[in-house]
Length: 169
Image 1 (cartoon, rainbow, N blue to C red):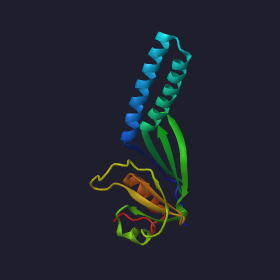
Image 2: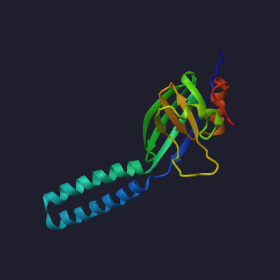
Image 3: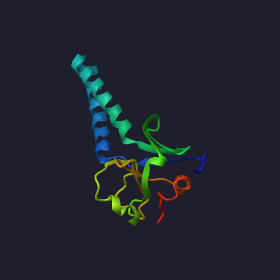
Image 4: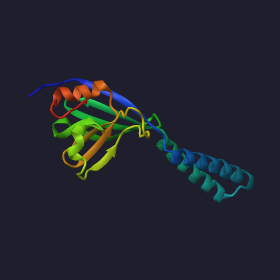
C-alpha cells in the first residue's frame, strides 16, 4: 500500500453562461427602474418589486462568476464551487481508492466506459472546443462520470497513489 501525504490544489474559472449575463443585466435594469418609480410615485408596490428584482440580481450575479477549486490531500479529492469569488460551497469529496479510471476525456483508455450510463458532473471551465482538450474524466464508483480540468501536478499526485487507474496518454 502506497502512503501519500501530498497536497495539491488548483483553481479553474468557469466561463459565464450567456443566459446568466443577460439575466444579470435585465434584473439590474429592472431594479433601477423600480427604485426610481418607487421614489417618484411613493408606491409600496414599486418598492417591493425593486426588492424582488434586487434579490434576483444578487442571485444572478452569484451564478455569473463561478470557479471550481480542486484539492487533493490524503487520497481524497475535494471539489469546491466558488461563487462570485466570495462564497464557497463544497460540492464533492471523492476517495481515490474508488476511482475506476481517470484520463484525458478523449483517451482510448476510457472507451470501455463510454456506453455505460453514469451521472455526469461537469466541474470544468465548460469552454466549447478548446484545443487541445484540457479536461480529464474520472469514472467513479460505477455511478458518476466527473469532468475536471486539473493541472499536471494534480493528475500526477493522484497517479502516484493509483498508477493503474490514471492515464496521461
